[in-house]
Amino acid sequence: MVTGFVLMDYLGLVAMGAMLVLAGIACTILLIAALDMPFREKLQRAAVAASLGLAAAVAIPHWSGNVLENLQWKGAPYAEPFVDVVENRSGIITVSKSGIVYGHGMYDGRFNTDLMHDTNGIVRPYALSLFHPAPRNVLMIGLSTGSWAQVIASNPDVASRPSSRSTQDTSR
Image 1 (cartoon, helix red, strand yellow):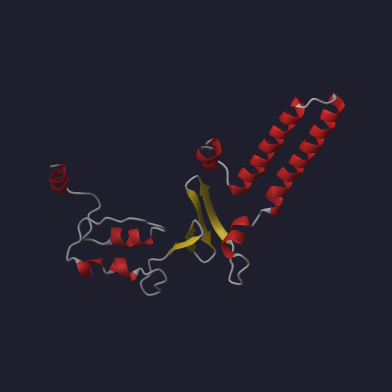
Image 2: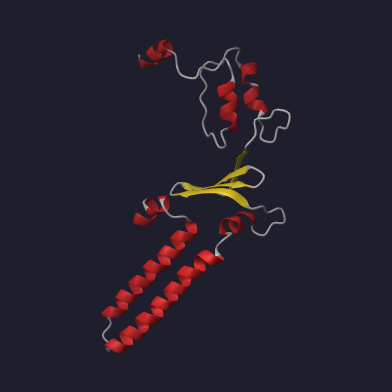
């Protein structure tokens, strides 16, 4: 519970792995202390466990520098590095060098509001006024990069907040 709901908001995937190794070594040392054997042998076993744990805690971050890229691309020739990563208990969001956003390892959109170089289907929010002559209130679900939200918010027919009349109508 603590790992998934608390620590994942503060630690990334690699740091969480190193922390779990250290927690496992601490449990191992406690179990060694509870063994019925001479103190000298307990000390030797605890020292071996502690040295293995410290070596792992140092090696994990060093060897896991590109773990998210390796999980995403799986050695594909078109692989590109991530320029931004957000990790928390809700998941992992990554942005590639070319501006593609991936949520939980799946394509989630691109940063683009340019209608002439449409790389993310941006023509659809621009076409909103074709489907309704004055789209005042618009519900958006799943904003991803926010590119579509920016186009909708820039539409002069869309209200930035509900009018007092529409608020009264919905409260009945």
